[in-house]
Image 1 (tube, chains in turn blue, cyan):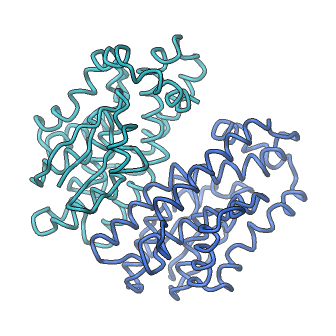
Image 2 (image 1 turned 30 degrees about the vertical axis):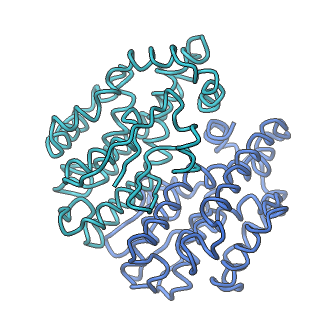
Image 3 (image 1 turned 90 degrees about the horizontal axis):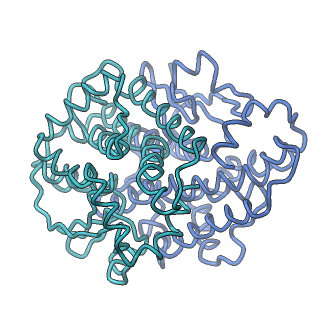
Amino acid sequence: MALELYLDLNSQPCRSVYIFATKNNVPFEFKKLNLLEGEQYGEEFGKINLIRKAPALRDGDFCLAESIAILLYLAEKFKTPDFWYPADLHQRARVNEYLSWQHMTIRLQGSKVFWLQLLIPKILGADVPQDKLDAALEDLNASLTLLEDKFIQDKPFIAGDHITLADLVAIVEVMQPVGAGVDVFEGRAKLSAWRDRVQAAIGEELFDEAHKTILGAQESVKLMDASKLQFFKPKILKLFM
Amino acid sequence: MELYLDLVSQPCRSVFVFAKAVGIPFEFKVVALVEGQQYREEFAKISMIRKVPVMKDGSFVLTESVAILKYLAQKHSSSVADHWYPAELRQRARVNEYLSWQHMNLRAHGSKVFLLRAMFPLIMGSEVPKEKMDAAVEDLKLSLNLLEEKFLQDKPFIVGDKISLADLVAVVELMQPVGTGLDVLEGRPKLIAWRDRVKQEVGEELFDEAHEQLMNMSSLQEKMQNNSAMEMLKPKFQMLFK
């Protein structure tokens, strides 16, 4: 049985795993998981990942959740080029530092902006209060500033001269609010230049392919049946409102 | 090697306990959070993110406890037993899986319960709205359920037979709400047994030393009320209560 990756490319951590595996020619079976249809709550998927989130990996009898764990597992198992997760003590520490920091900052805040801007209005059938949106954007902006000033600084990439898992995880999260129509790169020359370098290092074709779904989100949300999304209402309201 | 720590903070405790348990020498640099010391200029020079823990090894400065723990394990790999961060592919993946999951789950929810119980009345001058408190406790409960059902299952430790960084990071987060007098382990014999195993592995004395300040919340709250940093800290706390 080939290695299986359970993915929904609407989800940021799914994109980093997809890009990494594809870029490094990891042989895998793409198992599409439709999160907005609630497929993560099915019985079968529960056996693969009790946390009921994507991405998830199944390698024979071994199941693994959490994109960061999956990325590190793939890097080690398939002996990907050292630069992705350098063996050097200090460089590896810089990658780990970013991968840890990003959970409660860019990941959380980028997701929040995406939901508040695009999906919650659809669920509620009404606009989100402007002050809530402004507060979420402010938080995201503060984190983007830290990404520029503390993590990238004057280096080409987060850990130095070469792309690493840190840049990959960063870029997919930064692209999420873009999918909701929020141009996070506006007025941020450093971030834009970094994005271009990351895109080039990944390969434009692969980057675009991975982001096709999310960049079409505004259109697909328009066509969505709001009643289907009601299932998520209590969870999402608790998390983001 | 310097470690900038406040033992009231969970990630500071995991770093403190690990370094001591495996015999890595360090200089303990106190950063008293309730006195707002993380907002001092001198600390900004160490870390612009203004959080703890921070490690300074020569000229190399590192933030984020998970990164610091992995750095210490890697740097001292010749003297740190393998089980802390196993080299074996699947076991290491299990540690990484837990370390990743915990940020937005046990850490986030345990912190929220702690902040609401220990700090809200002090900062806001009123009791925590029941709905808010119940929601936070419910979220924490769900995280503890997953800790038991997904991560521990029937194993002695998260990875298997031996303690790892995952157990250490988990136990310090679990202790945070306990510090406010909330017995999160009530009715959870599996977690109690696991906590006791972890305590035994790191050493009871060390475990208790690390948790001494947390378990003495009333003196901490007193310190907060009596210091000039309160006005500056109030709005920052209010953000965390949302």
